[in-house]
Length: 222
Image (tube, rainbow, N blue to C red; front, side):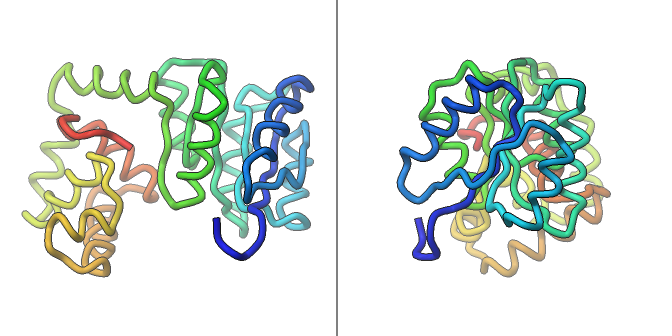
């Protein structure tokens, strides 16, 4: 981690046993600090300003509430902090809903502890993180046939933009894409911006989600 002090984690979870386990697991890692634990959407939104978390861990199945609504509200707020979703559901549908709402990662609760820590680290590093079972489902779905996004992309993107788009779908970050395509990082960032505009995508998360579903999956994803 950097020298700015421990990264502050806010946990939004209404099951006491899960909260206890998550807190122990996260605080065992150097550089992390669980600075807040809340049970409700309103409590989480209140803490965004006072606590200033570096990352929010959200259980999308909050009792009597919609975790997806909280994700959207966090992303639409002035703070817009990264979000890792935890879920008891292993279906791809739930992961896609979370990514569409603005989450930066989706991990099922059946995954080992180290997977959650890895997800937090990667998301704090600016990446998107999905649990292995969800990645496998994405690859399987892509094998059912070409995505309509592929035709759309190839019809309106330049040749260089298509190459960047495919690299995004292979899980490469801006630096890796720049090295692979012999471009500057600023040029890659400009291509990403134009791709989002041309495909009418709301944000980088939606771009990554579409790119993953469009590409062949020959390279490792995320």
